[in-house]
Length: 162
Image 1 (tube, rainbow, N blue to C red):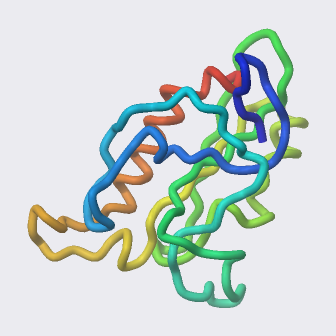
Image 2: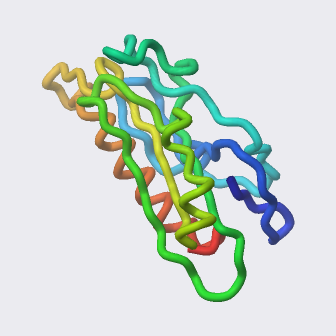
């Protein structure tokens, strides 16, 4: 995991909250761009996955929370030219899964393939895809989460060498 501190790179393993540059008024609405901050972020630990039931055949994820919209970034940390960026969006039928499971850790891939690896989270199940068929609760918030996370990557990944 790489995060910016004082213009340089620090290495650890954790999650960056892409929602820190976004805001929402309720769990039913899409995130909107908000004001970014200049504070130093401690991204040394992974955060919980989005609310969900047990994953069939796997049991529960490490922990879940409604405060779950984060990206994980692994960078080879080598200077020079910008690296290729690989973004992984976990599967699970929009009901299960998490970008924080050990099998999605991008440390080895970033180091051996010389790429920047990004995993992201999005709201699942009822929180992400239930619709009331109204403009107040149109549904598919999980897809909005994915789109905004990809936009965050596009706007910020150069700071991580990608």
